[in-house]
Length: 395
Image (cartoon, rainbow, N blue to C red):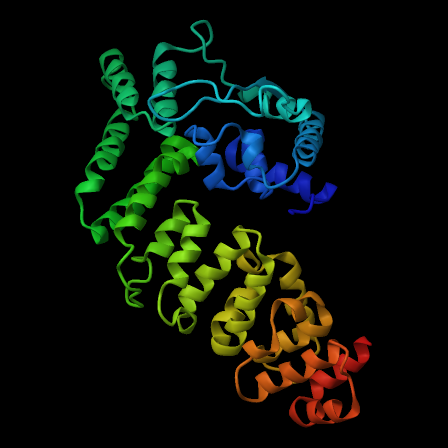
C-alpha cells in the first residue's frame, strides 16, 4: 500500500501542481501522490471500470483524507473552490461515478467534486464573462483532451467562421491533422512525429496534452511489439512507448521479454522506472543493485540526479560517498545492506555477480541476516576493509 504523504510533502506537492497546472485538480493530485495510476485513471475515463474508487491504490478513507488536507491548504493560500464534474472520454460523453451508487464514500465524493484555482485567474466560461471565441476555443481543448476528435473539428469550424484570424487557429488545425495522419506512418516516423507534436500539444492543451497523446503512444507501442531493442535507437522500443502512454506494467513486460535486457543499461533504467511507478520498491532496488554492479557509470549518473533515485535513496548515496573510504559504486549495494535494512530482503545474494564486489555483498548479506562471525569478518576485511569498518560502526 502507498504510504500517506507527510504534511510537508503534501504541501510541496500541492504547490508544485498549482505552479505547473495553474490549479489544484483532485484527480491530478491523486495521480501525483501515486494513489491512482494514469492507466487506471484512463480506464475510468473510458468507462472500462464501474467507478473511480475501484481502481484507487489506497483505501477510499486515505484518498479522501489527502484531498481534504490538500483542500484546506489550498483554501488557506487564498485559492477559490470550483465545482467539478467528471465526464467520460470518447463518443459516449456522460458523467462517470466516483464511487458505487449504493455506498459511495462521502469524503471521496466531496474531495473529487472540487478544484481550487487562484480567484483572479478563474475562467468563468459563460456568455456574460467571456467572448464567444474564448468559449469555442475551450470547447476545442475540452474535446481534444476528451478524445472526441469529431467534436473538436466541429468546434474548430465554428471558431474559424467566427474569427478566421484567431491567433491559435492554424496551430489547432496542424495538431489535429498530425494526430489523424499518425496511424498511416511507419513506426520510426510515428515516433518522430509524436515527439515533434508534443511541445505544441502541451502549449495548446497544457498538462492534459497527455490525455490526447497517450492512446497514440499506446498504438505505437503495439506496433513495436515484435521489434527487438536497438541500442542505436533506444526509444524505438515498445517499452519506451508504453511508458510514454502511462502504462507501466506493459512497459515492464515489454522490457522483460527482451533477451538479455539486463545487459542494456537503457533497458535496466526503463525497467527501474516502471517498477517504481508500479509501487514495487523491491524490484526497483534490484535494478539499482544491477546498475551499480554491471553499469556503474550509469548508476552514478542517475544516483547523482534525484529525478529517478528519489530523495531517500539520493540521501543514502550522498552518505555513502561522504564515508571517503575508497569504496566504488559497485560497493553501494553492499553498504545498503546495513544502511537500509530492506535491501537484504529485496536483493538476494545469488543476484550478486562474481568478483570482489559480489563476494563482499554475499558476505555482508549473511552477516546482516544473522550469520555474523569472525571468519566472515576476516574475509570481508580482506576484500573491502572500508565496508567492514562502516558495518561495525553501524552495529
